[in-house]
Length: 357
Ligand code: NAD
Image (cartoon, rainbow, N blue to C red; front, side):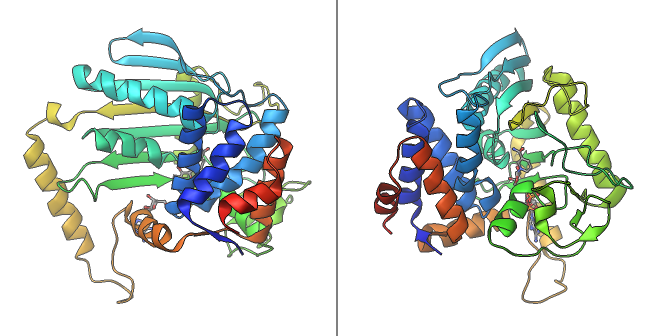
């Protein structure tokens, strides 16, 4: 299992994305986002995604050097077309525009349609936090078959539809950042388990007959099974609302079967950015947030070795560890990354050399 330092892994990812024709800044943004997801502990949204990205690039389902195109610019309302561009670049550009607009409007509603995979949505929450703003994101996943079942259903009807909420606190280094798939696990976590030949815990997936299974492979081979929504009927409700808020309001469309499915990974996002200072004294609000977070954390832990954490904290802890110790990738994932690189002209031996292996 190779363990690679974050800067070296960023360099490998940059080289691969650059080889698809991306200009330097775009390649860097995509690579830093992917490695940032690995650092945050979300290997599901890290450099392992380069394998499906290169497949989509070769199939014309991912278009490098695509900036978001503004299709509505009307005061607090900003709407963008993503043109199947690298989502990490397209969504970051759109998010920067939303944050900038929010400085004058106090609240901005931004939608993005037809973007290639935007990755770890928390990254965009972190952008709002860096500007002292609150953000709320609804995202759906289209252009391919569904893989999350509704509560009570045997067949998949959704993607993993993340919902993300970012809230500043009095400490810029410790914001509250809830960033969650509405399925019990993110699809990529099953990919990581499947690549590593591991089974998954009870209650995460059902097979093609709708029966429980521990085999993550059921969502990667026909006849397809499905992931289950988090929290039963409530998670199903959140997944449906993420689908509607993003797919319907962005103009990008939902996963309903009347919309085309070419086999890509397309995200749409509806995002609300809010300047808390427009609703009251920013100092008082931050103080109240801090006091409530401290109160939640003061609850006596069930397991003394596992203190109560704040959403966003596990990612921060993981980042410290992985920046120090490097990022461990399973052998299969590293092989797939090198194959992805080779498909755009990066010699696997060169990838090993850059990675320091
Ligand atoms: P997760 O289950 O690991 O974490 C979800 C949230 O719970 C996070 O905010 C985390 O900080 C918080 N959390 C975790 N453990 C906690 C604890 N003990 N106490 C308090 N809070 C805790 O994440 P996930 O649902 O598997 O999602 C993983 C990533 O996948 C996210 O970054 C999401 O944006 C991304 N995603 C992207 C897409 C896409 O299409 N682009 C789709 C699905 C998911």
